[in-house]
Length: 457
Image 1 (tube, rainbow, N blue to C red):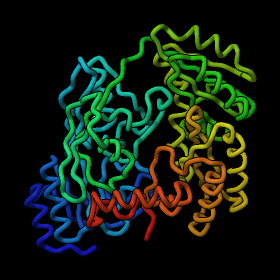
Image 2 (image 1 turned 90 degrees about the vertical axis):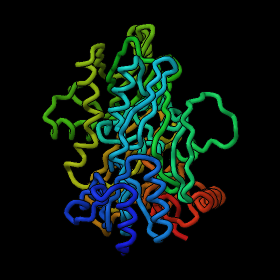
Image 3 (image 1 turned 120 degrees about the vertical axis):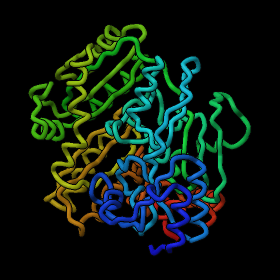
Image 4 (image 1 turned 135 degrees about the vertical axis):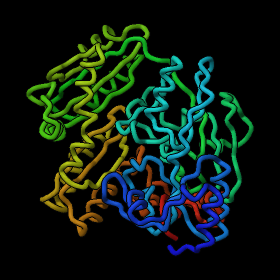
């Protein structure tokens, strides 16, 4: 996308010359995603520090008819924060302040560029905890998590990002500033604009700050790793755990191929040895101390081949390693095709078998890695060893089966560029038409992340 000298001067006036980056070597780091699959180009990177500067940037973009892509930690996996059509990159890396931490109400305000880890630290220092956790906590940012309505490891207890957001400060694509940072838990005064921005993937405007709700810290934590012979047994165990363990926070599924890969890549010894076909990583919290109650439920679970339990942080971290290291280990094999899908519980086990066979029918060279959040029905399907010519056929093999099973093609990563062609198949034409109408109302010039989420006209 060609931009004028006047446009760049307008950006420099808005944020200061040092925060408009145009050197090719400097901006190169903003033009590809974490996986390396999506690579674009940009005429420049602009780094605002507050809502006033963001509003000025949007006005400049509207005048010059220049599209922009918001970018935080750039940990997305579906090409949603990459300037694939040469858009301007708006980086939130300077908007990192965490302010107005209220230890009484359990709330804080975080800038869009604040990392999840920074929010978690601020919450802990105030005697609270932030309810969302991701393996990419050190780089994922608040703005990006709102844009994708990020879920993560503790959705079954605390919900996804949308449930934590009490209000936002944002600039819509029309240049209007929305500011609701009072943190009112009960506020029934019309449309929930903050909720609307959650999951919008930057297509409606730019989130600058958010008022976030915190949760009570746990008193007592117990982690268990359970081995099973098959996914059906693991799914039944997950159902029993959900209805029997009041403080259940996580039920994560790992299959044997992924567990072997993690051990090979990281040099770690498996906690359960020999490695069972399926493992469930389970965590529960108190009060009261959940150890005895979780152990009692585990005793009732059918089909458990092996169990490891941890009640201290060091041992718990060792159990979590087999799950947390999956993404890194798979990336070492090659650039993965990533599918983040949700299935009804009754279809989960069958899908996991069928999808491996379906990908193998496309290419026998590939490897399919499955892991994810079993209690949510959320499976991460990663495929390595593919070629460009095979990518579309693999995508069709995976996502068509998700749609046929009544699932969702995006559980928590968003639609981005990778899945936009499938949105209508999954949501239906009426839903997509309503989304497009909202997009036109809030971003009439179509400058906000135009290449993601909504299908091409």
